[in-house]
Image (tube, rainbow, N blue to C red; front, side):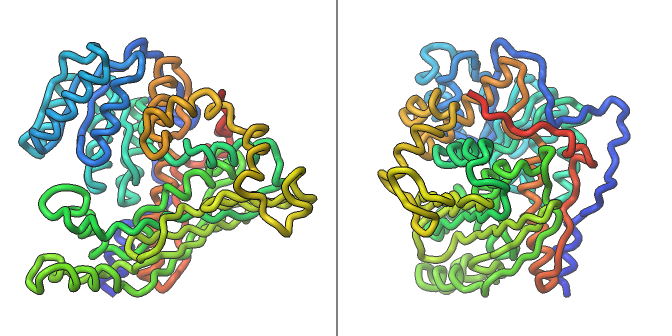
Length: 449
């Protein structure tokens, strides 16, 4: 009962949360004024932020102006990386470290154009909101926020300040994901009916990070929360295949179930002393969570999450239509009538070298342009660099971003909604409409070149 009450307390599912500011701007297709040089600041340069800073520093038209982190060594490491990567362009970088609120001083004093936020999940929303209030566009690691109230606050602040707030879902820039987006746009698998998305990534080793680092704070989420805490790597791409929140469809409701919570407690017992802090936690989060989303037009999406079980990595990534199916891990395609030179019919998958001709014919033009340099720059096979490059490119051209604030909130909402559903025995939970009905007039994501 107590667990259900806690879960529900974070779930404001009203579609009538109003923004009373008469100057508020709908951000679905929003284009900010062009920035010839994008003055960039970073909050959090640990496991993720250090890579973001180094890669952004290489992109033409950027100026790294400030870095903030709790730890002096991390801030100075990124300062050195940025100066080296920028070829002399980033010589005056202000550093803020040593206190939990130094990032606020940075925003107020430096006034950057954009801020990249790669900090523990509970800090994403307050940092993004303050960044926008201080006049910066906010780019936030996943998930965008952990409660629905925070997501509404982010939406309202973005609309009121007319500043972008984008969740940096890097998987939308993967080679396979871009290929499938292009094929869906071309209608090659017909009308879309169903999708499957997952983030299966065994990360128990992070529990070794006990004083600082990801495991030092993320382990407590696993112990205290029971649901799908990290849905967007799998969900983001399939949502864009289906034009979710962009004129064609949107999420309607979700049901969610978790397995027993066993793996984390067993791992702690095996690897740490009986009186270690990890053995004093009551692990409540199920080892694997499975959720089903029903969309407004009736499609279904299965979303799974498991960062505990001993199994190979997978993002799954499947989209099924009336004329065929595209699937990932392993990459494979089946089309009605077969695929020339590969399969005779849809009863066999085309995979491996059989897909070379399809990649050549339908490769996303963005990947054709940026794929090779992105692979050289790295970051999850290049998807990180491509995402960062596109952020800077859109801001310098004054074009809409590839992901808007409402998508980041909608995809992240699976977290608290799944927790509420699990606490209520799988009861359906309604998705908020963060656009307040305007998703129907929002343009589909273009297949940009």
